[in-house]
Image (cartoon, rainbow, N blue to C red; front, side, top):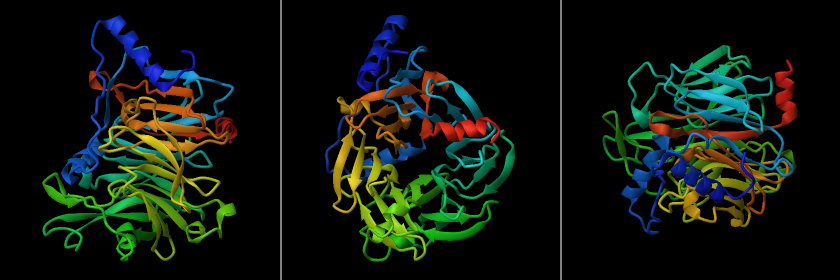
Length: 414
C-alpha cells in the first residue's frame, strides 16, 4: 500500500511504475473540454457511452486493490460493489480483502445491487441467453439472493439502474415501458418511458408511477434529446433515470413541499437534472440542473436537507461531486480533481456521504473508488482488481460503504 497522497499523485505514480516495468506506453484517457453550446447530436453520442461495460484504462499488474488507506481518518466499514459484465457483487473490508461474493457468470450484466437488513441481496440484471437489443432490451430482471447466494426469487421486468427498499418495506425499482404514438416523439419512434415500480417482498407489482407523466404537467421544460437506434428499433430515451431515493429522514418532514413523507428524489441523466416527485399524486414538486449538470447520477438526501450529486460532466470532459442546497439552489460544496481530467466518468458514477463527514466516490468508468475529506484530501483509494480482455479495468457500477456492525452481524449468523 502506498503512502497517502492525492488521487492525481497515485495515478501519475502508477503510470511511471508501469512504464518502467514494461517499457510500453500507458493508455491515458484524454478528453478535450467541449464548447458550452455543443450540438445535441454530440451530447447524444456521449450519452450512449452509458451502455459500455469496460473502462478505457489499462493499468499495470501491481495497481489494483487498496492503494491508499489513512485508517485514522477513513470512515470504518465494509464496501459493497458490483462488476457489471462479470455479473458479480463483492463485499470487501477496508484493506480490500473479499469477505463475500455473489455472481451469475451465465448472465449478460449486473447493475446496482443492494444488501437488505436480513442479508438478502437484491440485484438488477440482464439475461444472456437471448438476443441483445441494447438500450431497448427487455430481457431484464430483478433478482433476490440469500446471504449465502441461494436464489430466492427472480422477476422478469425492465428493471434498470437502481432500486430501494421503500418506507413501508416494499421494493421500488426503476423500470421502463415502450410506447408508440407519444406526442413527445416523432412518428415511428418508440418512447422509452421511465417509471417507478413498487413491488412487495415477493417481487409482485403493487404500484407504478410514470416519470414522463410527472414531467408532462406543464411546469417542466423538456431538454432536447435525439432518438437513437438499437436492434433495428428507433427509440427516444428521453429521461434515462438512473437513481431513486425516498425521503426517509423523519427530521426533515415538514420543512417544505419537497420534504414531505412520500417524496422521491430521482436523477435524470438525459435531462441533466435531479427532481423530486410526490409518490401519492405522481406529480413533480421540484427540479434543478439545467445549465449546471451534465449527465448526472446518484443524487441522495443528506441529513441537512441538502442533496449530494455525482455530476458526470458530459461534454465538459471532467466530473465533480457537488452538495446542493435545494432551497436556495446554491452549490455549497464541490469536489473535483486538481487536474480535472484525471477524475472523469462519462457514464455511471456514485457518491455517498459517510457518517464522519467524508464522501465515498466511485469513478465507475475507470473502475476506481476513493474517499475524500470535506477538504478534498483522499484518505482511501482503490482500483478494481478485476480485468477484462485487453487489460482494461472492469467497470464498477457503484460502491457503497456499509456499517461494521451491520455486516459483522450478518457474518456472525445474524
